[in-house]
Length: 353
Image (cartoon, rainbow, N blue to C red):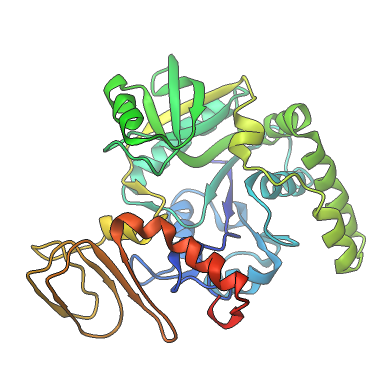
């Protein structure tokens, strides 16, 4: 496999408060084992891609954390955004940087740092196929074969088959309500949008030039300032002109040369405490106690704490304890944790962010 891999690791993980903080965002947490999510992402790539072809793009405030978690990554392979914006800006900046190193026909895999993939061999096989299709000029995305009518994911509607295992993208659909998601599953040609992509440097540059030219222009200006040794404020001011849009909306939706590879790879974006609970080991009553506990007339609860916890007569809770904060919420409302972070920001409680 000769693809370049770009890991996006600049997110803030607000839905994982209070464990995820500005100083230690979600991708640096060890929530599914003894390694951080970033380390696990790197490991699954390194099975087929040499370390010198794996890059991490992250905000300047998180660059040192990346170095600590991935000491085997060449230091020059950390692409530093002045500050986090969105996926289209970080991809534009990264692609512009990589284009100064690699030929335009080089394939580029893009994926988040904080997803879980249980079936690594199946994932790597899909990357091999994506690389082949990308070299034919397509912007490739990976569609997860849905396991249930999820309302927390965007969907990709697939059209005609382009070749075995590859289909044309008909359209992207935002997060649906339950009735719509159920209908998507019944139709059988809708897939969860994984947020993972593959394309060549030439194809993604052409796509930005056609659909988001301002991002390409700002990326070039920012790189020139960085290489010219400009002071940080000038770099920040330049980068702030980036359009703050996701790559799905800014590039993939308006593009015509799109392909989707449907995959079943044990994937989760672990986007909330409930999502983590869904992939975590539990007892016979579906209670998860990492440090031991007791459940009396209680079921389907997720505990994140290093203390012994006793539950009595409760169901469907997430209980998350850190040194300075405790979160208790129903699993069904775990998406609302970001509202707690917004409240803390409004109250300027920086010590809890």
